[in-house]
Image (cartoon, rainbow, N blue to C red; front, side, top):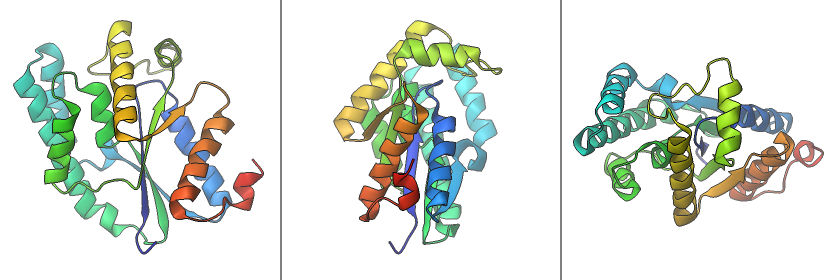
Length: 213
């Protein structure tokens, strides 16, 4: 490809996304691929202001406020698309920790079709590969509870909210033909599923180091 391959990994809290990202990057680098790991929130210049709105939304949910949050996140992704993604080497593979598919999990009132349109209108870069990482809600809830930082969520506080979040996200994965990755077993299995999808998009055989894992 004459530009970087852009891959987003999204999902609810506690699905093991960060661990999976690390494992994918390790395998790709072993195959001599140039891997760039990016995180949406760490590259968002408007993060503080947007999270202040998210906190307001958590205290006083309303459709208008949720829509404003969605617009702010779309504006941030547009900025990242212009000022961060365009600076990456053309022969690299970009692994993005969260992108607009995450809105399908965390936004409850604004339809995802409307959120997607917001991102399209703002020229947010579309990933070449969307990976939706999920587990059964009780598994990811237990994993999150076991972490030092806990669930670490501004908008999800109860198991029933987490269940709804997971179900909504899985529906959008199916509706948009994203890659569904169930990260409930061995991390190696989930890793190789995503690696296989990456090589499929690249249009080349899976690397030797990957195949040996």
